[in-house]
Length: 146
Length: 134
Image (cartoon, rainbow over all chains, first blue to last red; front, side):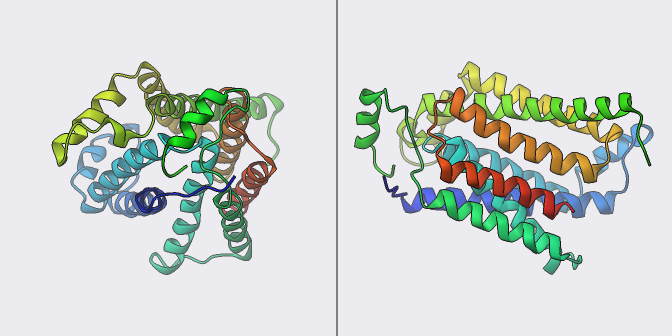
């Protein structure tokens, strides 16, 4: 069974990968500027809300959540999961080329494995159903992009 | 540094608890979204106003609300877990357990057809996450 995603659905998957990873990186950069928050300095969290990196990070993560839910409305959880895992690769590459962190050989190996994992699921169908539910399968077949 | 067995049990219980909350949240939200179907079909019209339909549909789903609560609770549980477990162990351990648990729950609870290709992908992601956190 081959899957055929609509261009808009590919856009959603790419949005999931990019918003999660760039959002986390922005939050990390913003919180590094704000400083360590502990129980004695909870007020710093309020200050963090005025940091431009933190604000943009939060907006991107809201975008992530919305696109993640949209993807789950037409794709399996086990299809969307590796797509979100690709975010780890983007974070690693961002930390290497934007935050100028060192990437060890282990991290490059991890990146390669996750890229392979995304390749595995990308070749399969986005939505699967119980074989004993022919009625629902029929309904699914009539829908575009599955 | 060697840990007392009771400390080890406490650490791994925290890791398992956080992962369990994440799995419950993701599976409930996935199930809610599966019940709703393609969100485009819920649009009430063109333009931004048309998105009120999907928003209403999502927010009136009990499964979604419980799932979102689990995710929010997971966030605070994660903060607590980080106070007793090092980030270098907690982050990859929780992420890996969540991936495996999600795949098992997707098969058993959501009835997804998790074939060999998807199991392999879950395994690769787990090892990949551990290596990236190395």
